[in-house]
Amino acid sequence: MPLTDTAIRKAKPTDKVQRLFDAGGLYLEIAKTGGKWWRLKYRFDGKEKRLSLGTYPDTSLATARDKRDAARKLLAAGVDPGEHRKAEKLAGEEQAANSFEVIAREWLAKYSPTWAQSTGDKIASRFERDLFPWLGRRPIATITPKELLAVVHRIADRGATETAHRALRSCGQVFRYAIATGRAERNPATDLRGALPPIREAAHRAAIVDPAAIGGLLRAIDGYQGAFATRCALRLAPLLFVRPGELRQAEWTEIDLDAADWNIPADKMKTREPHLVPLAPQAVAILRDLYALTGRGRFVFPNPRTGSRPMSNNGVLSALRRMGYGKDEMTGHGFRAMARTVLDEVLNFRPDYIEHQLAHAVRDPNGRAYNRTAHLAERRKMMAAWADYLDQLRDSGGNVVPITRKASGDSR
Image (cartoon, rainbow, N blue to C red; front, side, top):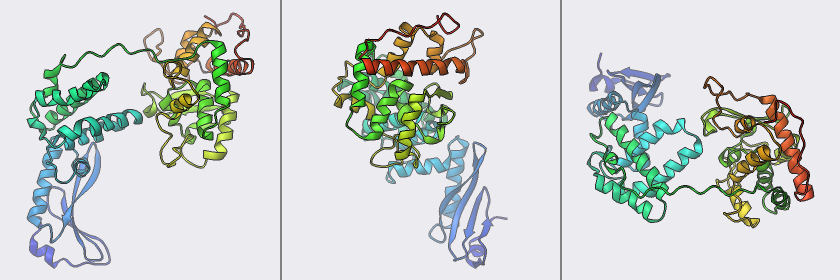
């Protein structure tokens, strides 16, 4: 039976929390202290949720029902009212519920959990820096192609052409989300195909692949005078040759030092598939040493300012620059190219083993993706041989005879 103002006024607190139900999921919660809170119970994506709609009598029964009806309209359009509320707060209370920023934040909240954290951080930062200052307050349904083009041209004009293209693509996804949820009727980004300058072919990331130069780099890393955790990251980068974002976000719960395994979960991987990195004895030794410093926290390489976040995106790259390696000589990604080249051309490991360890998409003869443990025994041998070879390069300056390996299933 629907509530009445009279029934609400007469309701007295008891030694238990009371709930007086109205209709459509709306109810009044009466605390033991006498406070009266309006709540909306609803389901979204199969999960039961609750939304606070204010306190009584500041929020009357009629107003609470209006808020309930507005929330149910959002639900009917496929929008979580709770996430919409959060987006409004982040955008600022003065912004309209149909503003570009509010809806973009809703879109981010809905889809970013399915991305790698570094991807979500970059996209959110792009909105904050390049889009919200000019488009954030505009009602999304009124934004024209000309307006949108002017904003992304600002990005391209500073030389960040690729960022401009990515920003435009993200805007298009936000507009499609707005159309799907009934807040817009068209996507102005579709009118801008070909309007931005083309992206120049990306230059290859600089990498050191000459054995003598690799030896010099390894000796420079050993002599690095910066923070101990950064030095450990530098020493592990060539041994593990994972992507820089995967290395910096490593967590101790993912690493089994006794089994010599690092299990990277799918949500941290570019491929969105879990990845296993066998740890050579040299890598285990570095990690055991580092565990004494950072092992009580979450991250293997915590941010020096706050242990609640990993080291910055540029931690390893900045260290390389301080060591004197320019952007045309070596990058954080360069350790991957180094390993791929030398493992193939010098140590003669099978390319598919190398590609598996690089976490590239490798498929079996039937077109199916190999799982994380494919060729694991062979990859363990490869990672151990690679670590031994790096030791030789570091100790001799690169003037070593390449490891000779008997013809077997491991060779090409």
